[in-house]
Image (tube, rainbow, N blue to C red):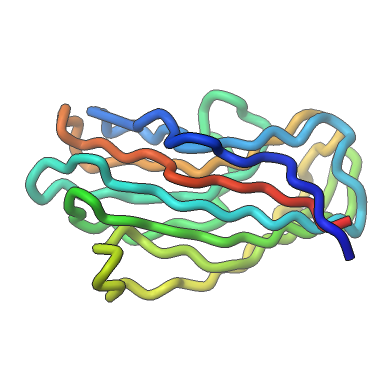
Length: 171
C-alpha cells in the first residue's frame, strides 16, 4: 500500500479568535466526484491554545459536509467536551475516512480518536474514540472536512489555531 499526501499545513493556521461562533481551524476540500468507493483517507491534526481568558471554555469538532464557509452547518463527526483551557494547551485528533459508496446518496464512514485541549507535558486528557457513518452525502459536489472550534464567550484573549493538519490518501 502506498500513500499520497493531499494536504499538509506548513505553518500555524489562522486563529479562531474573540468569538463564540464556531470557526474553521483547518479545512480540506474534496473536489466534486473525487471520492471513490473503497478509498481510505487518514486525517490528523493538532490545535494550540494561543491565549485564553480566565475560565472560558473551548469545544473542538471534526465536521464533514457541503458547506464551505459555515462549518457548523456540516455534520459533526466528533466533538470534544466543553472545558476550560489554558495558554499553551494542545489538542490532537486522528480520523480514518472510508468511502463506502458515491453519488447523490454517498455513504462515508469515519472513526478515530480526538482529545480536548490539555497541557502537553501533563497529558491527563484521554483520547476519546468516535465512529460516525454519514449517509446521503452528495459526492458529485465538493465536500469539506473541517477541524473547528468555538468558545463559550467572545473575548479578545480567546485564541486557538491549528498547529498541524495533514490529509493522506491510501492508494
